[in-house]
Amino acid sequence: MSSKLNKKDIFNFYFRWLGWSHQAYNYERLEAMGMTWALIPIIKKLYSEKEDQIAAMKRHMLFFNTEPFHIGIAIPGIVAALEEEKASGANISDDDINSVKIGLMGPLAGIGDSWFQGLVFPILWSLGASMAIEGNILGPILWVVFFYLQMIGIGWNVFKMGYTQGKNAVANILGSEKFKTVFEALGILGLMVVGALGANSVKAALNITFNVGQTPFDIQGFLNSILPGLVPLAVIFGVYQMIRRKVKPLLVILVIFAVGLIGGYFGFLTAG
Amino acid sequence: MFIQAILFALVVTLFGNYINPPQWISWLGIFPLTSGVITGLILGDVQTGLIAGGYVQLAYLGWVSAGGALPSNMFIAGYFAVALTILGGQDPTLAPSLAVPVGLLGVFLHQAQMTINALFVHRGDKAVEEGNFKAVTFLQTIAPLILNLVLYGIPAFLLVYYGGTTATQIFAAIPEWLVNGLSLVGSLMPALGIAMLLNYIGKKEYLPLFFIGYFLVVYLNLNLMAVAVFGAFIALFYYYQATKERKASNV
Image 1 (cartoon, chains in turn green, brown):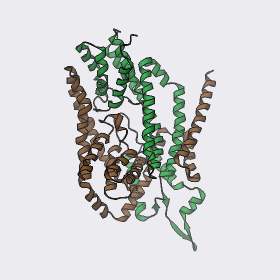
Image 2: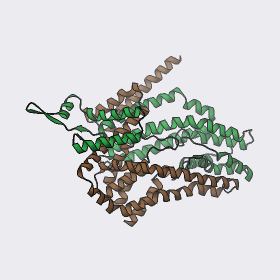
Image 3: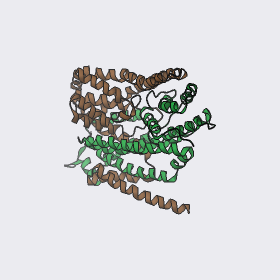
Image 4: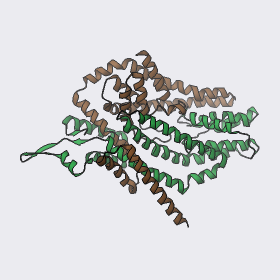
């Protein structure tokens, strides 16, 4: 493979894609123009004739949508390699390039979304927010620093992998058992942190006292002596049951408002 | 208040949504965890902003968005709710209750963005056809920011410029039981994010780990970082075991 693109071109493409993929993001074609715009310098370098440049731009103005930061970013890497080969005279049609993009965008977006929305967000937000509500400015700082570090570290390597190794290698590596094990292990860490956050952030206690004979009986005090933290846990699992039964989040919010306002009005429920 | 309102409008334009600003900078400020601090800086109360932002972030912990669908606009909710909390001189625990209605209204703004952006792409088709790559650059990088300025910046300006006295009056008119109730809502709300995450990542066989994390805090009073340290080693242990089993079954 004759390489017409140097390291700087590749980095520039990565930089433009990662930063601008979601500008002009829209219902009709989602990241199409983001991809096209990010490719401009590469297209100009690879194709000297204006009409070839226009043709290249046009083939990327078609519907495209993937997770652009960590895993789906392999696709622009692959696209750069395909455009480079095409410009060197390889027999690659517009359809070939598009079918690679369309074929990979869904599966890679699935992995990427479950990575950053399912693991990175919950873990970093839990840690960051638990510090923030105590007035510790390190919370937001920790979130930002670690988020950028992992996004750049993973994204750049996956992007390069797409460029140098191509479609099949990417599918093999990202679909491998080893990769799944890493996800499961981090899911374990995530569940523990989220559990800790549940105890840390959901505050609810029963404020009900009645008399048994002459002695007042405080339900919350009784519960604390058996299993402390039971009421917030019941709240979490009550909501969890609603979510599992596919109750719309908006309705769940309304239920939470109702419980909070009624509990607050009559005073039988307090924020611990 | 004029300068603060302008600053707030610019910040919300750049960070009020993950769509349209360049992501290199937008990640710094789109989520309540940081938008609270930024709002606090502008309005002169960093501490309240930080804490209120933390509470709003907790309420939105499990809001996963895929393919451009957004259940609630937590980005704008963070900014507006924290601003209202500070302007109205309220307790930060009230912020999540304020965030919810803003977040729902914000969904319409998000839909407007996603619709109007498509017009830029249509112009982009034309520009590509004519080989006018500079126009593509304008449509991709500048036009969406102007749209954000109109959709998010102007309401943000109005909120800070006119909202201060109004917010104080409204909060003063709210009876105490309602304030208590809303504050209780705020301390129940994190259950939603946690439940959504449990539904998303929690296979049944891993659920005990959630309880371990929960009761490590209840009984031992550990902070989250300490639990994360234990969690990391349990995860590592699991990784080694699973890798060993996989290798054994492959032979």
